[in-house]
Image (tube, rainbow, N blue to C red):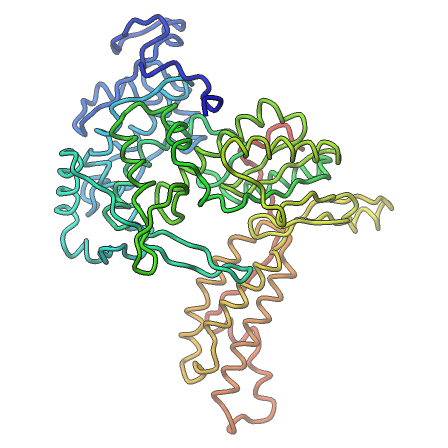
Length: 530
């Protein structure tokens, strides 16, 4: 495991000179600003305004205005809603803390942070964590405590007691409740649901840890990161494909979340965190155990899907792949990763084959391996093959306009909803429009359909999905028409069903999918790609 540790200067956060430097809010030379590593991170929510002003991005501290501009690009700057659960006191102290941590981590790539546990226990951090947990909703854990139950108990009282438990060092993670959700291939995906209390603490820890590791994450990673999305990853692939990357390694990691080795993950976390209490928190969540069908199991590897902190930990674990690839594999092709799903866009078949070998070597060091049936090499040249990524099917199509106007054969990479995505939305529509609902007011059925259609259409609207949107619209109209025909029964007069068309249901409020090709003008990591 020693081979995974890079740029670690030791447990001390002191400058390379070995002398501690106390930060003073006064003008410094440019050289002193570069050498300075100290940044005042307030341990209490009541930190002085002067200290915050000199150490926040855009202040007079060593970060300067660069941290403000760069922090905004990375999602570490800006304002949040009120930190108070009732919305009475607006403030952005949590965001200021994140901005400070990100700037400090960005300036010193080998710095290890201490005294982070105290930041997790801060009242404003816990309030912000609760606000986000409440916004995400979610089911109850093993204690059957729900979000509504906490609000009935009293949010202030709940957070105050939780903060006291954390500061006293008496917090202990509870067992995770295991549930299964169906997968597109017919299998079941296991999810772990922590208790509300654990979700709040995990969110608070994420608020503190995320900016530190976000400073290290590369542009090839798009999943579960601030100001990054699946659409940005797809846009990156489109530009690479149109720039000549016709050979694709479509990779899939076998049982990724169940194969993460705890010791290796904690080693990677400790490269940036030296706070033992914070590392203890992470270990507790990894080893909390899972309640599955009345039996508590304690897995020796893996992180449960469904935990608040799990996406961040998964990115930390696979950041090793990103870092090694940037150093030793970038000449073979471009890596685009969304959590555990990733592809490598290469220029020729030889580079694509070599890329697979190198990735298998790195994953083997992490205790992971590629799925032999789901990993394949795809040739995009001339529209020969295509591949699925993030719910979309990517395929090259010849430009009809160039062929008609100039007689040129030019192929461009396009994306539209995959077959699995089409089947899922049809299945969801079918669930909401059973024949037993024919006696309900059709407006009520439409009200339940609209959120599904809006969400699905919003995700795929940036691709070449116009024809697929028409197919889904027609399917929805046919399902609603069947309900009206079933309700009319023997009283249906000749030609009446023809009036129940798309315009009719739109007049009742049905959302219509409209497919337009929209390409993102700005996406992280797209510089230099046409």
